[in-house]
Every structure is written in structure tokens, then in C-alpha cells.
Length: 423
Length: 112
Image 1 (cartoon, each protein chain N blue to C red):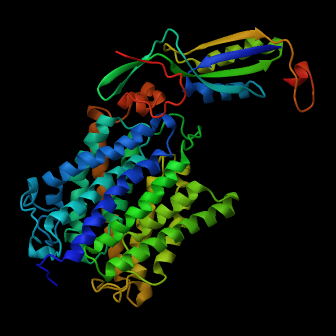
Image 2 (tube, each protein chain N blue to C red):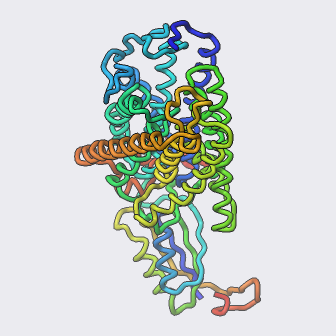
Image 3 (cartoon, helix red, strand yellow):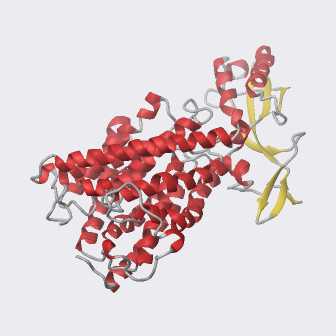
């Protein structure tokens, strides 16, 4: 189905979807920002906002080309055909892409994914990542980790050729960011005082606000991945909604039984877990599947976030517990629920849909390959930065908080005693 | 009875609290305060303009204890709150005339 003409309906939807996905990054900033201590909230917001600056520029100069050049080659990495915005025009572009929207819009849409994926890592590294080191890390990471993995899956690389499915980035975005987060925090070490000190969230209303924005933006993330205004987009939107709802219920039910109370942070986390898990499945499943996927993700992620205390790694805001685990849950469950009646791109149906275990195996290979590659390369990048300029703030800067030590600002100046003189 | 008051660095609160608990103390009151001392201010930047912020955030801890352990409590706080860098704060001990536990009306050492 090669569509060489621009379709106005598809284009209108993708223009909006691009905006929706971009809005997720400030949403993520507030989701995380509410969970850190008051002295680190600007540091957290800044890392997320900064990604909207730096990642966008690196995306169009080189990373997009490395991800989407040599489209459909079954390979490991793209080429430089689209570097420096070359050949990124308002036509539908190369026929291999089979787009019905302007190629430049496709590039912009994918750019919003490239912005939020490295930003996801900031939740794990909260309160201790030196800003300069963070900037260098995500710049290298986008080119060396995100671009190749995006090529494997979205760019028609080896995983796509193999037959692994990933509708909107369960592997490319969530497993990828989660595995990278684990590598980075191993290099960074724990926050000073963790886990003895509580370090509880300073503003849960921010976290819930951020969750709402993420949920809203996720419609663009998943339904937009249909790259058109069509039935698959509509299915993806419904699946996204239901998985978030079921994820929230799963997490809350578990909490209620285990701790006796349903918490607001649990509601927020459960919804995000459901959204993460449905991401790879969104346009490939239907019926009750999203409810099962979301619910299981909610329960499995609330279990997974306990592991950090057992193993002693400081995944501060549970990026590994929610994004890596939720991404794996979604990617693997797709091996059970993928349905050719929903999307003709499904060649091997899931186990519960009358297929054999083939797809489940492909999903396992794709997840494992992404996890290992992302972990290893992220670890090398982090180690290299640590050996040269250092990844972590000094102890004194950590005590003071990132807001002042990294950005010379204070987030909250309530009251009238903040005596300040202009120099 | 004595009132032991300490002004310390905010990130030392947990250390001091744990040390006091370990020393057998039953309670303390904590206040987030601002002030200046020898440490001086810090510089913040807003849209290119630099400002000196004179009043730095500190934490004030207060606890009323029997006369005979006041010195010891002060020592515990000093030990736990010290970083060795400028701005670690101060501890002082002052006499308390009377103390009443509101719930029971107990007075003096019973009320501490």
C-alpha cells in the first residue's frame, strides 16, 4: 500500500499527534518533579525541558538519519541521507516509507519520541546527576543508543525484518530507557542517605498533574503511531485509554490489599505502568486484551519496584520498575494477544489468538537485544563521562540540592523573609 | 529543666534526630528557619541579574530535657550536626522555669 499523495485527514491528525507527544515531556517533568525533594525540583524540571532543546537539534542534524536512513534494509543502523535536514521535505518522501503525510512531519513526530526517551532516564538519576554530565550523556545516548535501536524496529532494521512487533515503542522507548537507567545509576551510585532516609515526594499534586498530561499525550504517542487518521489509530486510542485505567486499578487493588490504603501516587504510577505496557501493543490488539495487559502491568510493576530495596540500587523514581518492567510486560504479552483481525501487519498471531509461539519468541529476542545493547552502551558512555568530567555532583552540592548547585535558583520563595540584594 | 536549642544545616536533621533517639530522647520540635552568620549569603541568578541571598535556610531544633542530661544532649547534637564546614550552626542551653504536659497536667521532669 504505497501512498504517494498527501492525505489531509492523516496530516491533520499527525500534526496534532506531534503536539500531543511533545506535551508529554513537560508532563513527565511534573510527574517526576513532584516526586523529588523541594531542593531538587528545578533540577528535575530542567533536565526534562533541556531534552526538548538539545534532543531536537541532534535529532535533525544526525540522529533521525541514523534511525530512518536505509529504511527497510533489515540492518543495524541507518545512513546519512537525511543528516543536516537534507531530503527532509514537505512531500511524502521516499516511497519505501509509504507515507500519506509530509516527510518533514514524520521527522517531527519521531523527534518528539527522541525527546522523551532520554528524558525518561532522569527519574532514576534524580537528585545527583551533574547537569553538564547529563547534557553530554543524553547527546551521546541519542546517537549511539536511541538511533540504532529505533532503526532496528521503526526503521525497518533487523528486528522488524525478523518479525518482532512494536507498535509505538515498547522496546525502542521504554525497555531502552529502562535498561539505560539501570546502567547509569550503577555508575552514579545511590543518593546520599538512601534508603535510610525517606526522601518522600514534595508535591504529589504535581505528580498527578503530570500523570494527567502524560495520559492525554499518550493518545498522540500510541494512536499517532498509526501515522494516519484511520481505524487502527482509533483502536490504539481505545486500547491506550483502557490499559491506563486497568493499570491504575491493578496497582491500587494490590496496594489496598498489601498496605491497606489506595494512594494517589499509586494511582499515578499504575496508570503510567498501564500506558507503558500498552505502547508496543496499541495498534495490534483489541477486545479485552488492553484491560488484561494494563491490569497485569499495574500489578507486576508494583511488585517490581520493591526489587530496588532487595538489590540495593537506587532507582529513585522507579524508571526500571515501571518502564523497563512495564515495557517487557507489554512486549511479551503482545506474543499472546497480537490479532491479525485488528491489524493486517500482524503476520504471526499471538498464542491466545490462534497463533503459535513464533511471535512470542520474536518479542523475547527483540526485548533481550534492546535491553542488552542499551545497558552495555549506556554503561560505557556513563563510565567514560564519569572518568573524564564526573557524572555526579559533589556531596556538598547534593546536600544543597540541584536547584541551587546546578542552576543558581530557588524553586519556592514563599513568605517575605527572602532578603535579596542585586549585585 | 533546660531548653536545648540548635540551629543546624537542613540536611543534618535526620542525623541529629536519629542520634537523639539513640541517646534515649523522647521528643523534639523542628522549625525551618532562615538566618545569617559567618557563612554569608549565596548568589542566585535570574535572567542574567545576580542577587545575593543573605538569609540561608537552616533548621532549628528545640527540646526540653532534665538538667542533668542537658550537656550530654548538646554534645550529641554537636557531634551529629558537624560537617566541619562553615555554616554548621550553633547549640545553646537555657533554663526553663516550668513545663506542663497538656494531656495530663503533669509538671516538671514528669512532663518532659
